[in-house]
Length: 164
Image (cartoon, rainbow, N blue to C red):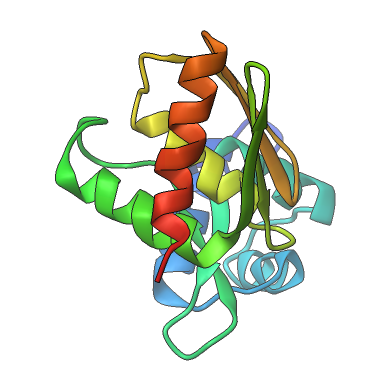
């Protein structure tokens, strides 16, 4: 039986779990597709709600097996320093990054449109101890390094991932 709130609607937690199931089950490429699937599952939601849910679940677009992109969860299931996270970072970074550069304490990573959030999320999961923090947009993310030398080192390390 569905989990119903006092207003007769299904719970947010149930909706979030359904979204995770749907993106595993179907190659969802756009928010509108996810909205359609959710409505078929009995959720009365708007596109704005789906957009907020995507952010809350840390869903990102990643390369699909047959070309194009699809939503996937960027949250790793294991500890930040495990090989799985490092491998996921390398794969997504290689597919996402166009350019890496640095100036002062800041490293700039230019990505394909819509891919910076995924690359930055996995960069953060690697827990670099020379990094103060990151800031991500749609096609660019910035890394604030502790020192200029750290920024140059991070920039060189990231550029290495871009080489074929």
